[in-house]
Image (cartoon, rainbow, N blue to C red; front, side, top):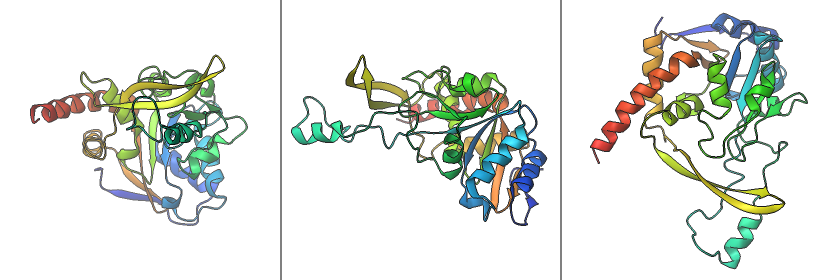
Length: 273
């Protein structure tokens, strides 16, 4: 079935049990490691809300599986004046001083489903001040154990571990512009686009600002078409769960495809400069 064929799995009121059936019908299975990017509102009415969606995902992967979500805080723990260099003016210094330090309990603006998982008592969270990942399940500790400050979505990150675990990406009502594994893929190319991360941290009891590079933002340039190309090549089905278009993508197949296509596209971008 082609990528753009939408097969409805359930049209009745969504419950935890119906959602679990839907994820299982899509290919989610016992023991799977799953990275979920989601929009709760896209599903339509869900009995129990975001907590029910999380419960359904956990039920679908079972006690030996793991569910991970982005718990990013890029818009919270960041430099309010990235354009200001040199010694800060009093106003700039005051606003920078007001930026909070990251801590494991910090809320994330990544959506209701991600927050419902992050706030579970058994949830684990990786330590990056801007690009943390939360996870529950059998491999949660391993996935969130470490994360490099630079290249925060690359090999030395939860995304690298998820790749090694043969994880899948579940997109619930969102597109490939929300698929962080495409950032992971770009980080593996010879000449990735880069951006500067800047955030405060406590180092040896002192508040300091850390500056490091990471793979840059795509701004809907290459991610959507590369994602669609992969879906066509891999015969990925788009399935309607409630009113949400959903796709399940195997990471180990996605990454080499995306690395090759990004390498080609970024080289063409550079040739056109």
